[in-house]
Image 1 (spheres, helix red, strand yellow):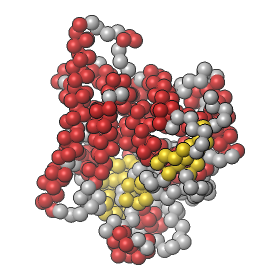
Image 2 (image 1 turned 180 degrees about the vertical axis):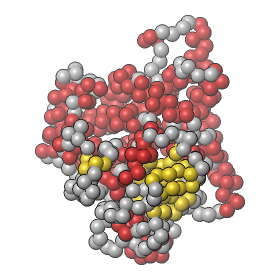
Image 3 (image 1 turned 45 degrees about the horizontal axis):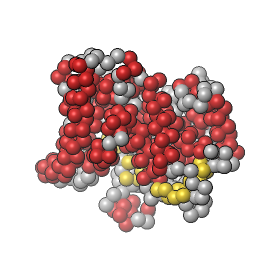
Image 4 (image 1 turned 90 degrees about the vertical axis):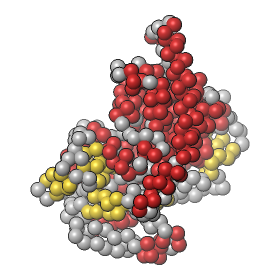
Length: 498
């Protein structure tokens, strides 16, 4: 067990409010440094190497105050075992319901969300790509334009505008994506899912917890109801047109609403309100999650893609797009090896909004990992993404941003742990989860971000407002590791853009 002293953390960090919200991730690193299951210890001393794994390869527990649960942090050796386990034994879905009490605001997580990502989005990527590119070009022209002088933007506000414009079109169709009333309700709902989920959870309120959370979520439920009406009206209109004249082929809308209506599932599951409610439920994943990732990768582009590096990336993008008439297709993206490597390195360094992966709630009576570890029903497990991706035994010079790191790796070559000599599972995109229950929308999100940020690199020179500066640090808000939303950027159209 790792102890987390509020007083000590406030003293060590030099920030008074850490007494209320102590840091989380230094303790995760500490657990892998020193801790065995029955020990506790203090904060890692200043200057110590917080990236080195514990040589004991043992799990440890840490209290996750935001969710009011104990979490078992597991070593990398158990990752392959978790990969293919189904939801009847190890369940991400049940962890989300338990930890977030989603039923208070948006309804419980169910398999519909997985179907939208794994079957509907992934199954229609070829049809989606031209829409993503068109919408990206439209919103960049509308929001940033072609300024000949440096023009300032807040990094989060810009990311929200761009991602919302593109992803809303894919999820809800062109009519709603261009409807200001719906966009406002959808944005307020999707961007508040996480804040409303975490509010008041840090404090142990006992029996008052759920009544208070229910009252706090009242506004969120009202926003959901407003957005739902827009979607149900559109579904009803499409159902009416379908009865009058069956739509075939190119006549059918290309969006998640239509794909949901066309699914071979019982009619009661395709009721307009059920489809609307569930699609809005996952809008946080389709919209809010890519916004955070866009902020992180954009900061890495400004900080690390400079001079020759930026020229190299731009040249590759131009060359690959030229082969496919300027289109961001699956084929053109597959050839962008250096751009892909840059994105992988960015995700390795920043590890996503919550740099823990493989969240699972044990549903079986108990789960045996090996002879040394058996955990009871109801236990929560997770793997420390940040520790894994900053491990010097797996990635040499892990603190250095090396945009060609993954470019040099052979796709068929397994990574090897220098300490043990054993092969370790591939985890370039570990920020999106792992195994059968990994984020089903990860393929869409990666392609979305490459299109948006690739277009930005081709169109604009980008810099931090106010002069050069180091990359803005992430903010530890347990369990979130959030980008700095106050960062200001400046854009100027490149001379060769007409």
